[in-house]
Length: 341
Image 1 (cartoon, one colour):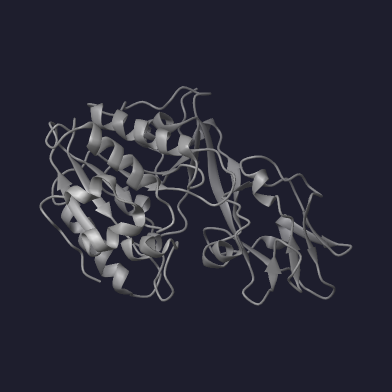
Image 2 (cartoon, one colour):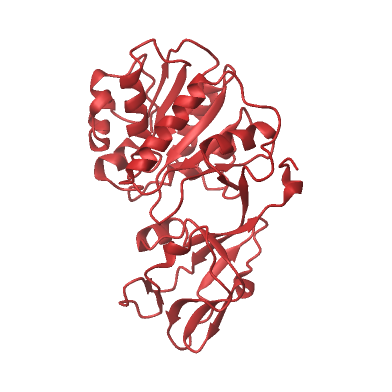
């Protein structure tokens, strides 16, 4: 997989649809857009081909600021244009682009070299900060993810919104790789058709372009609700599941994603389960330990929450569940995490 590194974007980029990018660019593309101030911001868009918010935000900003008028320079990485052409998160035979950045534990694949090449180029000189833009499939508030608890990272997340998530797993994601070089965040901007997510992402990037520096002190207590990813919840590969009642093993409730960043109370029914099926879920901690038996119970043909659970990124898209996960189990982080009292 070859990285394209043109000196400029073609004019057609400014108003094209995600489906057109593979034809217009020809493949994954990294380009430096000159602005009035350096060091540049690193923007990554379309790691997942069905998440267009980053493209729309960048197009809006480039139409707002004519060539050379950007308040700050940008390194722009337009990632999985082949998947975008098909409107898919990832194509069959591809690894998820946001799992193969430096630090990944996945086997070598073409994307591994691609991302290493991208990082080598954009970090040859200092960066101001890094933003990876995403949509998601479930009902979620807009929120930022960070991988370090230094004040600049907390302030960057707080600039996007009041809700933020701290995680160190999964590895191989863009923000975790880039956090070794500069303040980095992933912003989650709601569903692909969420116009407020597009507006929010555009305003956030625009604010970052105008910023001279990030504050070097944490946000005041109460300004930022910081959650930590405790466990990744997945469906066992051998389980036949659905959200509409057609599967033989496990039938999840169709409104599961409505609990995102809320509370699945102890005893809440998550799914109906066929007789004789053992625990159908795994819930993996950062150290690899499976705590599914602590989080879930099977009673009377139903899979229930065994304790209060805060889910995030829960989805009712079965394909995404197979490709990624059912949801992440979250925990509140206390003041000792680095937030100012």
